[in-house]
Length: 116
Length: 109
Image 1 (tube, rainbow over the protein chains, first blue to last red):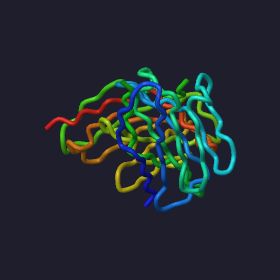
Image 2: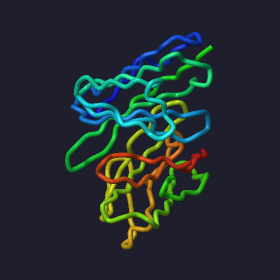
Image 3: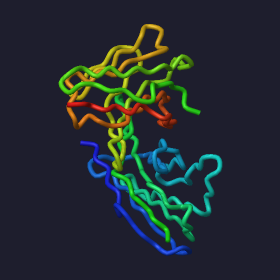
């Protein structure tokens, strides 16, 4: 149980275009989803916390107008990288929080974004 | 900043127990200790977590010291597929995980 999917798994786009990444919790409802970014050989960095039905909370240094997050339902959150530039190329990973006695986060497989 | 300290890398022979240490001397009373691992180019995988008591599941055991300032993740019979970066994280019930550099565990045949 507790499966999280991401789509697409990898995407290549031209500089200036926008890219949408979907994160879905397949077999549970997640009131909270998280978006991370990971550069090569580096640890994960939390970008934002997404709560269903409310605005996302962004970490310091993350531009909310550039990384648009929509958590429309208890099973879906989307991250849109607007006007992507080559420096946005990274591995983007989402996770979903499972509430209850065993609070934990389950992670999606990640989306590799390459901006040319 | 991450609230945990882990060795950057460790080796372990296949079939032996892998013991991964983690220091979290500033952990507060309501923070859990979580362990995740990340195999190259994949999303992190949840392993185990605990608050005070030792925990065991089908993947691993978690031993937390009585003062909760350190813990050890034990993979009882390491296989080559356990080669990964292992992250020890302390977090409260708000879920926010602050990731450190982790321990790169290499299982050798």
